[in-house]
Amino acid sequence: MRAIDPDAVPTVLVGESEQRQALSVRPTLASQVARGEAQETVRETVERMRTVELTIAYGDKVAVNRVSLTVRSGEVLALIGPSGCGKTTLLRSLNRLVELTPGANRWGTITLDGADIYELEPTELRRRVTMVFQQPNPFPFSIFENVAYGLVEGGRRPKRGSELEQQVVTALKRAGLYEEVADDLGHPALRLSGGQQQRLCIARALAVEPEVLLLDEPCSALDPISTEKIEQLMHELAREIAVVVVTHNLQQAWRVADRVAFMYLGDLVECGPAREVLENPQAPRTRDYVRGLFG
Ligand SMILES: Nc1ncnc2c1ncn2[C@@H]1O[C@H](COP(=O)(O)OP(=O)(O)OP(=O)(O)O)[C@@H](O)[C@H]1O
Ligand SMILES: [Mg+2]
Image (cartoon, rainbow, N blue to C red; front, side):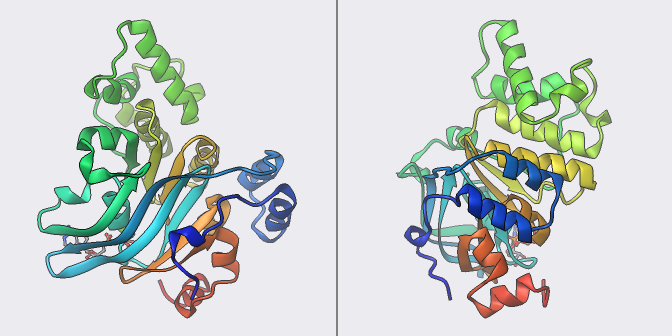
């Protein structure tokens, strides 16, 4: 079994030649071609979050069992594993959403830049570590108001309206949605397509300038074109911030992840560079899962 000591994972991603080699064995989707053309010879990663022996239980039911994991800027970390293995619980623990569930208990530590997240103010933590859910959940307001919401509610509203507008436009551009909606930012968000709604939710999450973006199966309700846009977006965002994505889709993990963590029944079974975990897993359970024997 591959060691799950968070320190065991290399801090520098693959070089260009290895990327090309990886592309030759991965499915040749446009997003990957774009990755290959990005000419990122070496992308350094920086640890932002760390869980140490993290256990989460709902009453007697242990959902996450002594998980030690790092989350780094400069990369996309994909959490994979069969239904009910604790992926969402682990993700929700990273910005303390899990504590809002009655009966949920936690053991072990979680840090953000070395500081215990339980020492941080929850609202500020959730600004720095934002989450996008499986089902797009825009508010029944306009596109503009949806993106401005986090800025206004979070007390980060700029003094001048033009500054707010600029921040909204910037977030929409980062989420890859601006060109499609630029003509009418007053358009009701609920009348956008599913893929546009999900990118709007990502724009809303990005408006507050998070340092870690958590995505829980963000493409599961989307068509292939919208999915590809969001995958491309994840890759671009990971240049600046840490991106953690839960996915059931192993092809998606192939396409977007730099590092993959495989969970099974609450355990972190294996974690390492995406190519190693997906192509040459060490643990029998990971092997069976990536070969489609269960899940
Ligand atoms: N609010 C809750 N109360 C009690 N048990 C819960 C709660 N949420 C999750 N669980 C249990 O914790 C375990 C892990 O659930 P979790 O949602 O984290 O799994 P998951 O890997 O995200 O699954 P899926 O792939 O189906 O989304 C499951 O056994 C689930 O039934
Ligand atoms: Mg889940």
